[in-house]
Image (cartoon, rainbow, N blue to C red; front, side, top):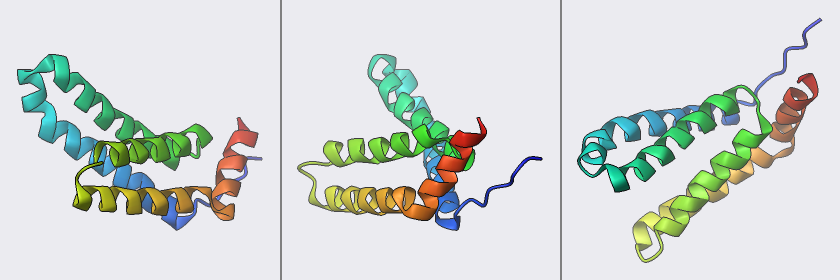
Length: 116
């Protein structure tokens, strides 16, 4: 019998935020990325990573929570020298890490790993 695991609501919210940011960012940057494809591919790649991270957070993949935290941590590093964006990205990084690694979230991701 397949055991249904309950995804923590906060994980669902974070996952859908990543999906939205990935989709919206990909679409918003697409035209400028096509104009300067050599540099733009990296921007589009980060948007695809956000999208994939969100999708696989919903599916309970443990690696996706590491990807999600690494993705926002990368944006913290990119924001150095810009006080407003740095503060926002750092706060989101701390919040997302807390949400994705608290005990009930860890249990959700552990169950997914055990079912594979």
